[in-house]
Image (tube, rainbow, N blue to C red; front, side, top):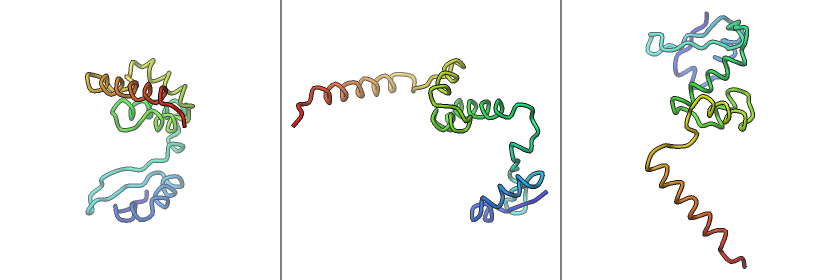
Length: 120
């Protein structure tokens, strides 16, 4: 097992990731206390790593931590396929509530104004 402090991780993240890939895991230390654990997904030995990547992407999107586009990259899926998957999970792909509806109406108003704008 390898350990790095936060400063080392910040200054050279590729070294920590390389250590996680080559060794079992890397412990990230914060003031001499274990704070986080880096584990290379390939080394987990799960039988269906692509499914783990999709589950991670869905969880990150559900929590609001990442966009659908970023989730698609995490899952290694095309954006259209990821949007379908998220929608099938019952997740809202756009904001909800009055604010989102107002933003959508404003976007439509701007698009309509742009379409009717005379061209020079």
